[in-house]
Image 1: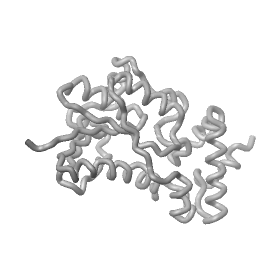
Image 2: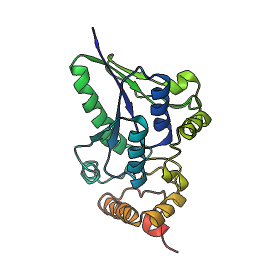
Image 3: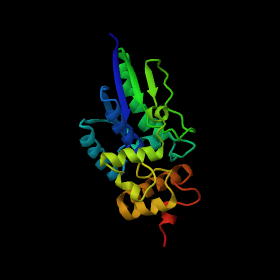
Length: 227
């Protein structure tokens, strides 16, 4: 018989959490390995939520870590901060560790099914495109017609609810994710001042050594925090 493995990546956000709960409820016959790719720069609330997820799923979440920290990759890219046009942080610190982890199963002769939380109302999004015919990407929410409202219903019914950072931030990610709105940078300074100072330090180093962009367009964090 062929060897099969099922994996599901958790980001610390609502959609992947809801998918994990959904698969556990709707497909209990599938033994899924859950994983989280840790950049080392995540919000404290993300780690808290992952601990809660382990309790809800009754299973340990495997932590995948990038071999190098953010500063290493910042230097390797010429001190240019990541941006929407150059998301090297996602490639180097999220996708690469996942590929390395899953490749060990593929090399061992497994067919791997990877479940990704792209919703039915996200037609614009495309899942990870596999280069290996034995790595099969599945999109259960899209296949079953589950949208954002459905995700919220799943989390509410489970008693888990949303991660706490949704109280002040619109999406998951690193503490200094460039997708943050300016008001969310302000809230980061209020709630996690040490993380804001670290982001400001990295920005200063990057702009001094490369002359590149700041985290926000046209405004540095030092300028943003002025009264």
